[in-house]
Length: 209
Image (cartoon, rainbow, N blue to C red; front, side, top):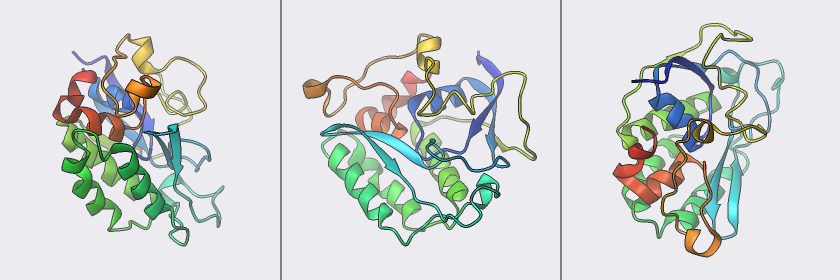
């Protein structure tokens, strides 16, 4: 039985495991497309496990009118070599994992299309990850901005600067799994979905239910 009838999430770039836990535990998932863009959030960044520890990867965006445009109208800045950097970082972090090589082409097919808008890239990657996880979900987009929702509003709590407990901790669903660098540096929880997919493959969904 689902924990939530409906949840509300921000658009996010390869978001953390708790994001997909929320989706897996909800009957309906609303993705916010009407809010104004906010910096230093999962909207344009993800966190992977590199040889040096957790590594944050950010997508640069076109700054023109950034503070007055809804998230769906924010353009990606391809004049910076971020894409090459991210792809190299993914490969360096996960090339020796059990499953990254199986999924690499799927991710490349999205990145190589170079969507103009950040929201579109995030949505394509979200749908791809749901498919790779084998997770069926009813995804809808918000039609207008609502400051608050009565229940299931995780737009603030599923963000890198949030100081409270993650959803995985709150619902006692945080479980360890093998990570490439965990034998040396220990397990790091709640990283980008690409981490759990690369290391657990088809079994990743078991950590969400």
